[in-house]
Length: 94
Image 1 (tube, rainbow, N blue to C red):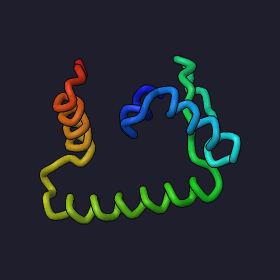
Image 2 (cartoon, helix red, strand yellow):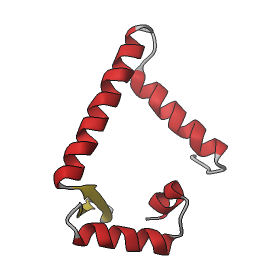
Image 3 (tube, rainbow, N blue to C red):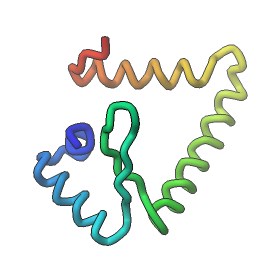
């Protein structure tokens, strides 16, 4: 919930309330991720379809750009950029 709140730049209480409302409206569902038992909320219904369409569109765009640079591994670059963003935001990723 902390990452969600930080990403939206809202308080954790506001994020919790938002997620509770979205869960009540069946826009998201709660899942438990073993072995840590972390709770995750994933989109449902129209929100899930929309998220899938957005993801697929982004993936096609990313694949098209990476096709121009065959020597670069996409997964490594994505991991690097995620770490870079965390570092620039002052989060320790080690």
